[in-house]
Amino acid sequence: MSDSSVERGRVLTRAIGGLVSTAALAAVLFLFASDGLYLWIKAAHVIAVVAWMAGLLYLPRLFVYHCDAEPGSLQSETFKVMERRLYRAIINPAMVATWVFGLWLAWSGFAFSGGWLHAKIAAVLALSGFHGYLGGAVRRFAADRNTRTTRHWRFMNEVPTVLLIVIVVLVVVKPF
Image 1 (cartoon, rainbow, N blue to C red):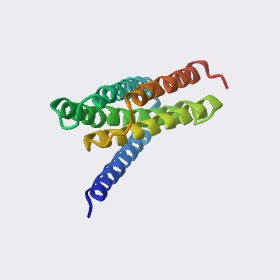
Image 2: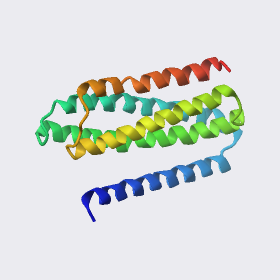
Image 3: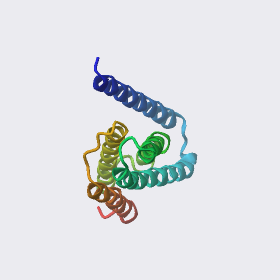
Image 4: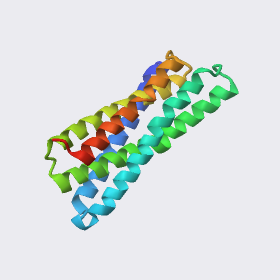
């Protein structure tokens, strides 16, 4: 087996593990959480969103600086550790918590109805896709195979901001 297929297998295993864990947490929450916990779950959702967004805003900024580091240098190796830890220890768990708590709130509070909620879920799906894109970039940087420029990563740094604005307006204003 080649190194790339082994790595793809590891990524797939982690992705499946993450999906199974998320489904299990969601099932527990959906089965055992009462409506009396609504405000606590809402608070946990907001906390998870803040942590997720902080990571999604910081990681592309790390990539901007990593682009300027010589591959194999101490600086480059430090960025690799920072990127990997940020992605795995903060961004991934925060995304899982955001989805689990958010889906419970959408089900419990709104029965998944409302055009604004559907649009919000679509925007969160786009944010999750961006999250996955950053995960691929973490792996490419770790293998010293980044082909993107600092300009690209500066532009990518704005993507979560735009999606956050859309999501907050949808939730607060509920325009449709």
